[in-house]
Length: 235
Length: 235
Image 1 (cartoon, chains in turn orange, blue):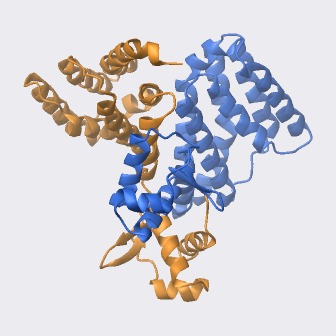
Image 2: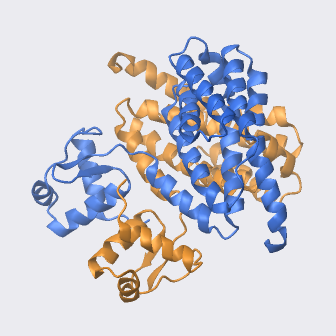
Image 3: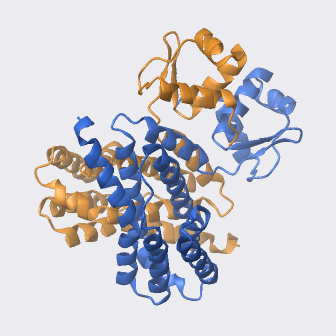
């Protein structure tokens, strides 16, 4: 990635002035003067930082320090998933592998902190919603995403929580573009979330890990089926 | 993040024309005509896509489909680490936790494929270099990064490999800004890499996991010491 000096200068100014996400940035005019650069340089730098979610341009209001979310990563990964030379199938398999790895790796932490956590009740409601929707043959994307991010919120690790959300987004964006039939066993997936939560609340780490593995079985089956059917096209 | 329609249109065009990373994009003039937008819209969209590493502007040569690396994520995370409201220490602790989690989660895959892999020999040379440098009291950042990415290359999961590299970059960029004294036990860290490799080549998953945990001990000790000394500043 190419860095412009002005973008770096603005980042430095955010640090020096100890500005936090949501704080207003100096105006374009002040930035020109302070950094001794042209208005067009400031504008380009702001656009670049805005794409990275480092600043937040609220039209008609001004420019603020951004939330620095993982949205730019999701955007690039989704797009890479779609056009990867190894094929989207391969990209999705990698995302599923990383999601599974993260879920298993943080199992101890989730299970040890789940009982009595603020999230326990909300997670229960999300499981009920997923099971209910599945019983009516409906999908439950929002509840699914909320379940996985709230589960990781238990760990207190915001980075892990954002990563899980980001990979969930990549996963969900890539799946339909593959033309994979969504798993018929939608009820199984809903139930697997319930098993994960039950084991977490019972302090059962091994049961939780098993439920995590079961949770990814339907998508893994779909991936295997899709890979087999396109095997002749692969290098 | 704000998306401009023109950026989305260019992404769509990359897909429709089946362009791959490194392929040339149509010229600015062609894009204006094909997408029926102004030259300034095309330029802004190209800049935005360039920040995300989705296109690669090679000045004097033209514009190409980019590599879609995780560099934008690293940039945002490093910066967030530096100004996070919870403090950089907290951000670094999260990165270390995620790195440890990924290493442990992919342990089975690394160990099962390490023996006889293309990477085994190179990894051995990197360990020798680290041990050698440590014995002379020198740091070994490049060898360290190469070790971790090559180790994950064994898994065949490019996303995991890039993530490990990206978090290594964030980790290394944030550490000096914290003013944490680099671990005195630099020789221990070098040796821990050797233990990881030896266990991987011996097919010893439990030994490998233990070596991974030991590998992060020095930085965790530094983090604890720094947290204790700033505890009174924390909310």
